[in-house]
Image (cartoon, rainbow over all chains, first blue to last red; front, side, top):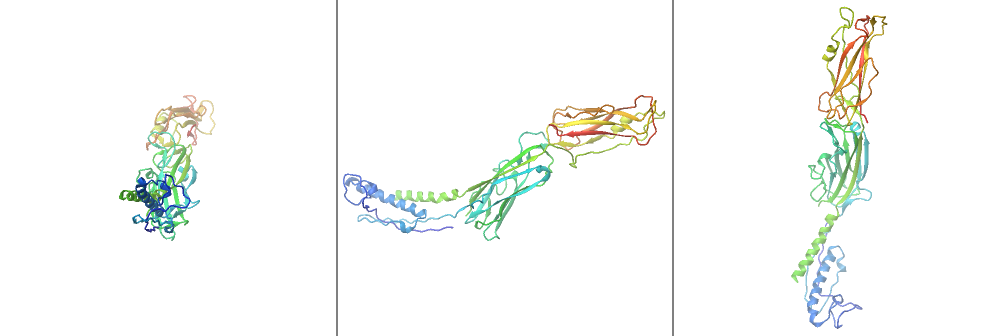
Length: 242
Length: 190
């Protein structure tokens, strides 16, 4: 979602009633927060104050405060400064409340049984988004070293299924966990950015149906898995992808 | 004034850039599983291996035990492949005599004893071979010393030797049901 506006600002700030002026004289129209009223310095600081006011007004406008709140300031001997302000407000993109892909899954004797499990999540992105995954171990891994013919890393697959609001637009991809270690070859290896990750081209706000699936058939590799407890952690990141 | 305006625009651009990075969000999924201590006969992934040999006629021309049974047995080259998920499996061997239920009087024998020997191929220390005589109690489970080799070939071999009757002059009783077996148990170990 993109929106913008412009405004014209002019003048310097009029002294506000009751404002405290610091200095030797209380003569007139310098901004009270400028706090300088000596005749020698007045002109110089007036210019600075105008500039600061202009900058502040720009920032004020960009962060989305109504134009109506910008103050028009007059000073008889001031010049007019026109500043074109263009702002873009990016749409939000995150996980819906309670919809973060998180949790744990344990499968005993996975080498014999295989496994499949879905981690459900809910996107809250008002525009296109990208999701990416990093595997900390590149597979299920147990500690220790083993000789040739044995292994301490078990393969599995990670699949992403993203669903947009229309229920028709989806994004799907699957990679072996071995290709999800940071810097590996999977198309959606993390971290997510505007250019990296599985891209869902349409908004998805509180739309159910998205999931991250982890799965593996019964182990059939030529290297024998060593007995032990195997673990892996998947870090899932999401980014707006305009 | 141009300098100040430029500063203001830079400040605006910085604020514009903030939301993009702030939108990156993260979830964490933890996976775990286990592989149990176990041993498998491969490639079938079963837990048993069975083979057999038929010696044919056991007696020589004089009725005593003929020679050559060890040669016949070893020519069969009993070998198979086992893998264990554990680093130091155990092996036990139990040889049962080649015997018949037909009774034997003095001067005769209805049981042929022998010694079965199991050798294993390992990836490191090898405590074998492991042997058991059929006229002694079954062997106890003994750690082999390291992992069984998993190189695609057989890594457990069985041989037999010293076939004999109680006395060399004993005649074998006639029967057609002489049978014996060698039981090798390979276990995950501690």
